[in-house]
Image 1 (cartoon, rainbow, N blue to C red):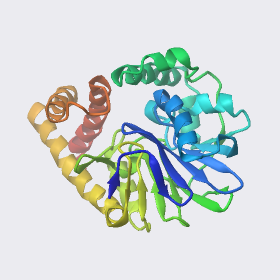
Image 2 (image 1 turned 120 degrees about the horizontal axis):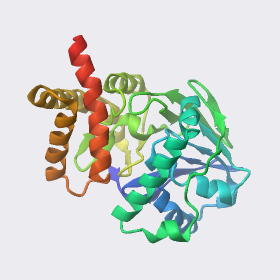
Image 3 (image 1 turned 135 degrees about the horizontal axis):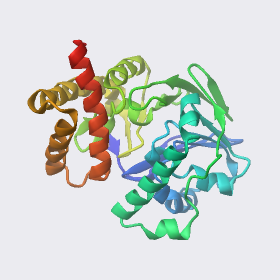
Length: 301
């Protein structure tokens, strides 16, 4: 079953935020952890949901960033300001990106653009949400285990959606939190998010497939449980293969990656006018995908 509303995923794990942007609260008993950073504009909503679900903000000792894109790090500075002792965790590559002034500028610009799209422009005026220069934390990588009270989180490096993506796996709950590296449940299908390197994205999906998963916790459009969760990565692998063929078809038709990306965006938004990303951002992502696939086709890969 797919649940698109915020609420309890299973014992000790809650999905917070809104349809377009989810983060997760893990209660380890003696301490808690936020997993993923969402869009900046959900920050005040998350505070309301703490109260609604009886979650203790003061128990949060760690926040795990799953990758550095603007729509997955937005609430990080907000909660770091509220909880100065909170430990920030991300891949080494993510911290390299988040140290770049251009990346910080993009995070703040796109965060405000998303708030405008969702009719929440006042949120950035009412709260200090911008990512500041110099914000950093501890690097985590492949095979590391993070202790959160009674729970353990295993880190897997899963590049392809971004160069800095990691997934969090909770063996005790059989819960997988891969951010966009695991595919995005959207309507009745799965969005294949091989944004930076579609080939590595497909390879990362295959690495995730052997995991026992009763709860697939996405960063967009909610969480999946039961039989649908157990087969979600397998369906994501099939969806990625189909999407790659689809994208390569646009490349063969239009030749130029930029023209192919524009045509793809026209087609996608004609069918999905309510998609959670603004079209300019979607088209920029499509250009990244097309450039990579054009290179693969040229090399015969």
